[in-house]
Length: 286
Image (cartoon, rainbow, N blue to C red; front, side, top):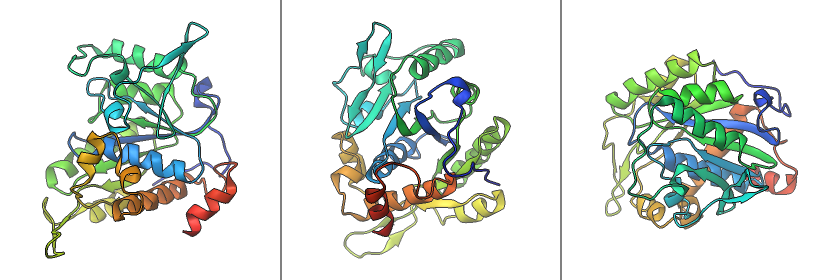
């Protein structure tokens, strides 16, 4: 079952990130389920509450956040010679390996090198005062996930999946990994759950009938959100405008706001997440 700290508690982060109130991981058992899409839109939805939000792209081999957040040509700057200033896109502070290599370059590193760059992203970046730092994990259950669990006091993980059996099998492995690394699972996000034909308004479960709710019940975690397949999401991300920015009044953006509310509830943040209490209250009443 989910374990949460009392509202207002600030994680120790094992001596790291003293200005960060909560660290939330976004992971998946396999690739191709839209994990990074969920991560960036969740970050933007949390920002809409008035919270100060940052995101660390821990997918060192396949960094995609600079493209998705519109920062593909940006570069982090330095201050005091050793401190990295993160790039800010759409009001979200971000660091990614994608800023440090060319788009067609390949990162061919063993585990110790991954841990080293993650340590630099955590210790050598000026994250400042943040209500939330989201960690966009790579898919699977490898070195990066283990390193993050050892380096940071992670409040909890959001696990992204699609409805088909092969994805759910990998989710089971991801759940077991988080259990072994003592990271609470805040809940599941079912992505690409169905497609609504624009001509007929009929829903089609393109990955088969969903069993995610049943699985969540069996594992004792909530289903935080079910996201339909929206044809506007991928082109918007390619333009560097996540759907919460590209279509803020649309159904998909509202679903991400609902997801942000569910995550805040699961972390025990309640109404005490940010000094901008008026905007926070408006977000919840809307």
